[in-house]
Length: 113
Length: 113
Image (cartoon, rainbow over all chains, first blue to last red; front, top):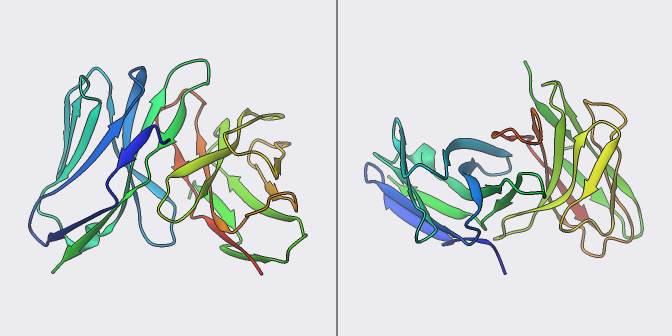
């Protein structure tokens, strides 16, 4: 099964906050990432958090990490229609496998005007 | 501008043919990666290269081959042994294999006809 899990779909109204959740299984994760993918495009790194942190804020984005529950969330404040995309959570494990990125299945965010 | 470029954007292959997907970067990155993306699934690692003239199998390497003769280039060949090649292929690079941020190309959509 997947090491990183996300819900498939989230729908919000423009101006509301969006919260996208992710769970991971490997407690040795060193970095956890959020990527955004627009239709037919590659992935764009939004933000990342080191595993010894519990929160990181960057403009409209807030990342919360609950290491005990292995739960990561991305909150987007004042969600805009341009935020509609697929959001991927990923973990990087700094072991002998060499810092590979393991991705979740992605959450499709739809923002309604 | 520096970046990572994949070509072509769309590729059609007849059954039994080999095809090669191009990935070029001018970021002076040592590490390069190929991922496969299927609908509703996360990215799965096909091959990666930590440095020129070296590459390693990822999770789903069967039916694929790569080369890394130049630092800038990491082409992926989808061989006839790959039984279900229709997918979206993403190339990524990092400054080093231990670096945090991976930069992605815009992807190649391969369809078997």
